Every structure is written in structure tokens, then in C-alpha cells.
Image 1 (cartoon, rainbow, N blue to C red):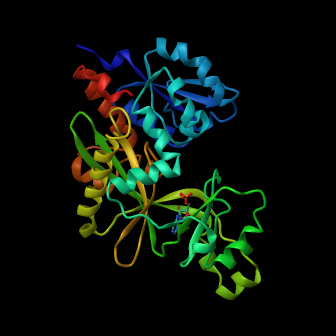
Image 2: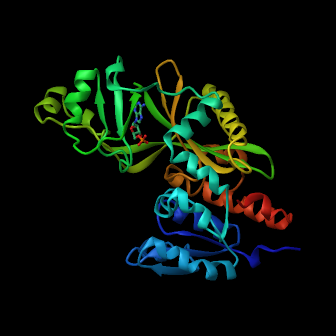
Image 3: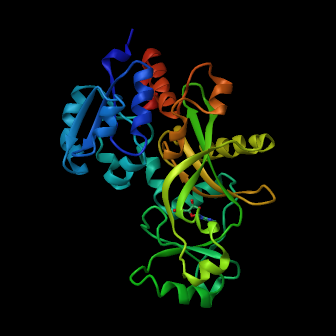
Length: 338
Ligand code: AMP
């Protein structure tokens, strides 16, 4: 019988690697962490990696491939992996890879992503083709903005042209309706083996300075000429109103279904719908991450939702390893590799 002892689980040391590697070890896999020199401390301290391979720059990943293939390593992609390797180079990854590589291109291309989510029936913020069309508050998002830094909000075309003066050289942007509500990020897991969608957990982000501006009075904000930015610094766990869960399941199922029209086997494994929920409980989805998100990190020991389903600690990282383990033991590994 095929055994998990023949395989290893590997990822890049960043983002959600602690959780992924811990989850893999809990399922009985040996683990490899590919890490930038000088950044190995967390992976040593938390003892999640059986082996740490140090590299000087992320590009070196490609020179390690032969060795990883020999080790029968299975790579788990995460946000930093996709951003360092680049969605276009994902096809150069020859090491076994959990998930459909091609789907990652859709999360990094705003237009392709929007078509997919609209096709899945998601409600999304409006997009304005040109500043003159602005008739509600919009959030101006620059292409390639680093972690939400430097977005600004404009209420009218005049407001936009005034605001954009502070961002010289940023000619590529999207004008998205600004939804007044609360951010809610749903962490899903779809297993191609069980053909079932699970809700693993929810989080909201802790963004600097957006999440602390409310600590000073409006007058002080004006006096200090504070500009809002959304630089992500961490994540906070959430549970949502139980009556909203049926819709959240349906949204996830529709997104998985729609993905099958896009590429290969479509979307499976972990993914996240990033939404703002307005006071009428409408979910406005503004982004999808087609792989594990860092918002699952508060749940290394499971979430209230995984406790309902599993009688053991089940993080998203561990759920990935469980899927791979099931696939190996049922001789169906090819079904989870992409
Ligand atoms: P993003 O870089 O698209 O993930 O956005 C960064 C942050 O900006 C999010 O976490 C939200 O706090 C906020 N944000 C993004 N899009 C919207 C929107 N359409 N309406 C309100 N807030 C938004």
C-alpha cells in the first residue's frame, strides 16, 4: 500500500508556513522548509521543519527542484510563494504541487478574478471605468500596491484628481465602490476526494493605520492630515452570525463550480473569499485568494467551526496534509496535484 512515509511536505518559510508544516507533521509527514538566509529562527524555534534549506533569494527555488523531486516533496503554495515565484512562473514549478497551478493566475489578475466571481453569482463592489463616473465613494487601488499601502478614498471626480496628486507615477489603478461595512474573510476548504466544501474559519485583518484612526477624534484626524492606509500587520479570529452561514456555504460552492470552467481541475484545497458585509448583511466580495491565506494562522489548533466537525485540532494546514494523506492511501495522489 502506498505510504505517506515515501513523501515529504515542503513550503517556503513565510506567510503560513508554520501552520502548514505543523499540520503536515501532525498528519505524520516529514517536512522541509525552504527559507531565506537569516529568516530561519521561527522554523527552528517552533520545531515544525525536519529540514531547513537556506537560500539567498527566492529564485534559487528553481535550482532546488531536482533535489525536491528526488525527495518526493509536495509543495504547498501560499501567498508569499505565489508572490515570490510569480503567477506566470508557476508552470515552471516541476515539483509535485498541491492545487491547480493555473488557478493562481486568476487571483492575481483583477479582471479575470472579477469575471470568475461574477460568473459564480457573487455580489461585488461596482467598478468605475473613469474618474468622471464617480458618483459614490470609491477606493482607489493601485496595481501592485504592497499589502494595501497607499490606497485612498475619493467621493467625486474632483476629489479623485486632488487625491491622485499625492501618488505621482501611479498610473495604473482600479476605482472600486467603497463599501461601508465590516470586513469578513471566509476560509474555505474543498476536497476533491470527498467532493465537499468545508468552512474552516473566519478572520478580519488588522490593518495599519485604518484600524486605529478611530482612536482619535475626527478633528484630530483632520488636523494631522492623516491618510488612511491598509497595510496588513496581522489577523484576528471571528465567528459570524449563524444565520449567515447558509449563504456563505452557497457562495463558496458556486465559486468552486464556476472555477471548473476556467482551468484544469479548477479550484480545490483552501481558498478565501474576502468581503465587506454591509448593514443589510449583503456580502460584497472584493477578492479571492485561491490558496491558503494568512488569516487562518490564528487557528493552528482549530477554529470553532473545525471543532464542530472534527474531534481533534484541525488547522487549514493540517486539513491540506489530511487531503494529501487520504489521496496517497487511496492511491489517488494525482487527483490533488496540479
Ligand atoms: P485589498 O488590497 O484589495 O485586499 O484591500 C485592502 C483593504 O482595503 C481591505 O482589507 C479592506 O479593509 C479595504 N477594502 C478593500 N476594498 C474595499 C471596498 N471595496 N470597500 C471598502 N473597503 C475595502
